[in-house]
Figure (cartoon, rainbow, N blue to C red):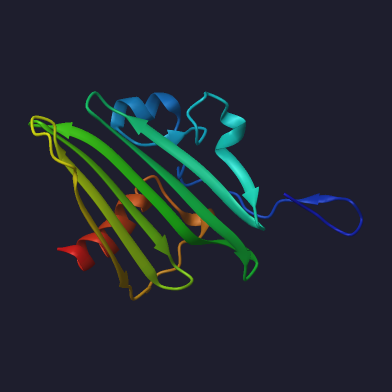
Length: 164
């Protein structure tokens, strides 16, 4: 909602394509749901405006893993366009703990990757991998048309393409 010159509110964007799934469906199908960034249960913190950008935070927790995503939209071209994305995953498997972070900047066409992998049976520092790549941004992701699987499409399009 935006406030116009006459102090009237106008709807600026509306998503009816299932971009944000219900809590029940999140648990049933493994999708992220709205959550506060600090996981304090306050859903009002899951959507915020910072530096004239709209931030939406989602989270999913499984038995031995979790994932969180922060979507960053800017209102431009008369719509909310995705300009940034922060994707974090944590997991434990086979004696290892792994943390992955992918930071997308669709405006500057940059993708940063950080991975930390720790062998919990060894007394060594975690192995870390960091790098940054230029990406060829072909698609615009618009809030109104994003779907529940848009995150997976983005990860497939960019992470698997540039890091495999």
